[in-house]
Structures are given as C-alpha cells and as structure tokens.
Length: 449
Image 1 (cartoon, rainbow, N blue to C red):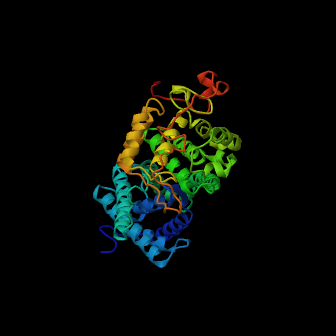
Image 2 (image 1 turned 135 degrees about the horizontal axis):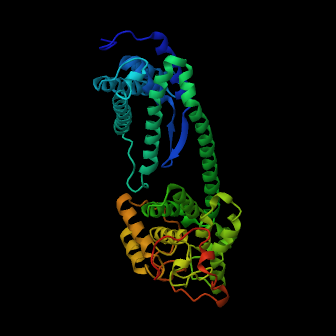
Image 3 (image 1 turned 120 degrees about the vertical axis):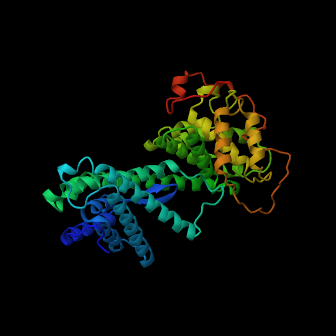
C-alpha cells in the first residue's frame, strides 16, 4: 500500500516540501575532510520534517526529488542520491510510526510524546544514509591504501553531528508549518543559511591558504631531487603527532602548516650546497644552519601561520642545547618545533638520499628512540611511534638517479641522528627567558631532560 497505515497525504504540502528539499540540496556547503571534499546541507532538516508532515511514503517522494537538485552530476549519481534519500526517509518514517509518532502538523498535545519517535527517526535516517554510502564505496572497491595517511575520524564525526543537528530542526519546521506554511523552513533555516555562507567563505579561505603553502613547498623542493614530497610528508607526520597528543583541530592545522614550511629558508641556501653529495665544509654547514632563521624571516608576515612560525624557526633545536639557530635547551624549545623535529628526521631516514638508501620504518623508529632525550623530546617520539603503528607510513617512491652514491661512509646531512654536532658559537647561544622563546606556541607537557 503506497500510503501506509494512514490516509490523507496533503498533496500541496508534499509538493511544497519537495521543492524546498531540492532548493536546500542544491546549496550544500563543501568542506575539506581528510584531503577530500564532503558536502553538508540543510536539506536533511526538510527531509525529516517531511517524515512528520506527510509520513514515510511522502518523505520517500521528497527524498527522491534529490535527483532534481541543481548540480553538476551524472545521471547515475543522481539516481543513487535519489534512491539513497528515498530509502533513508522511508525507513525513518516507519520507525517514527512504530514508536508512536503521528503524521500531520503536530499540536501542543503531541509534545513531548513525539520527541522520542522523532529522535529515533533522525538516528535511523543518519545511520542508513551512512550505511548506503559505505556499501557503495565497498562495491566500487574504493579503499584507503595502506600507509596513505590517517583517516581523520574527528572531522567526519563533526560532519555527522552537524547533519543530525540539521535534522533535529525538522521537528521545529513541522511544528510551525500549520501556522505559517511554506515560510516555516525559512524562519527556522535562515540563520543556518547565513552561517553556512560564512562557513563557506572560511572554507574557501582555508583552501587558498593550503594552495599557497603547497606552492611554496614546491619552490623549495625544486632545488633537491631527493626531497620531492618531503615537506608534505613532514606536514602529515607532524599532524599525526599533534593529533596523537590530543591537540585541538585548529592547533593541529597550525602545526601541519609549520611542517609544510619548515624548510622554506632553504630558498636562500645555494643550490650547489643543497645538492652536494660530499661532506659539507664549515662555510657550507654555516649556510645550512641559517635556513631556519631565513625561513622565519620569509614567512613571518603571514598572519594565519601563528604558532607555525615558532616551529619553522626552531625545528633544528635539540633538547641537549646543541642545536641551532639559538641553542635552546629542553622545554625552552616550542612544542611545535619539537614535534616537527621528530617528523622531519623520521621522513629523512625513511627516504632515499644521494649518499644512502632509505632506512626501514623499524630502523628509523629505533634511531629516534636512541636519540630521544638528547636530540628529541621522548614524548613526541612515542606519539609518532603510536600513530605510525596504527596508521602506517607512506615512504617516498623515488627512482634511482644516475651517479648516485649509495653506501657512502660520509654523512653530508648534519641534521641526521648520529652526525657529529659541533657546539654552536657563543654568539648564537640563546639566553632569553623561556617565556619569550615559547611566545609563538605554549609548551604543554613533556619532561626536560
């Protein structure tokens, strides 16, 4: 039976809700999650309002209207979206009825009894939508390659919560529908449309920031064949450590930015020094040691970097005070810099260089642990170990170029663990109080060793 255990669907109401659903579905907000785009829209609120106003069958018709959304989509994707929304709405409508919900404009006497059935309908709609998308991805063979980076469940969970929040507003739309009719969704959703527009602007700005930093990374990596992709991998590793330490998403992003730009100062280092395969002279080593400071000077006016500036400037400091450019000791080193230092060296060790082949992940972890407490913050090392053990690590795939010197006993990179570390000159030692050295990023936790 098309109508179900109730009669009298108001065709006018059904048509109006379907039109509103198509409009809302056509203006979804696109956000970046785990380097992919996902969409959120207020259409889910209209779909759940349809469950209350026109029942399961009517809600299924409204969901099917998704096929008419104004988007650049192929016919197959439109058909899937329509079927997905129709099935989810139909199932949610039946759950709503089974738990005692009533179809039509709810009156004062229907509250609070209608709330529980409606919440159950919302959860059914959300879970079935997610399940259908998951089944589609599985059938298409879309899986995340091993070691291709961690799946960020927190942003995905936030999107689901946002969707549930929209759907809960559907009950408000249904409650005032009888008084104001088609204006009801506008009264309820207009503030959300405004918020959606603002959020869309912020998302576009974030994408512009990402593109700008990626371009700077490419500029650095054109100077050295062996560091292609290094900046982005350090950014990913830094974000993994920060997330493992439980930092909020905004701070994780700042530290990720620092990882992307940590070597930007190498733009000021002669290319012949960057690409040298032999042992560095004292003058060449001095030129290399200037790159953190030069990097800081290059990007210091970029306001959105914030804490990332401290990570860029101090990522070659060591806990024992024998790093550069300022010879900071222990917890004087900003937390963002201690994170990037670990991610930087880990990627260096697991990457092929002109003077040696890449180390295995296991050997690189053993080396980081060996140098924990002297060069690295042990807390950051163990955070990376936990994250890599769980998520894997994508090592670079670089073809062996002609003339390479794998197996050389020389170690031309002075920043790798085990390399001789000369004491910094007296004029480079930092004697400023800790408060100044951590002003770009507060230090939380860890032990001074």
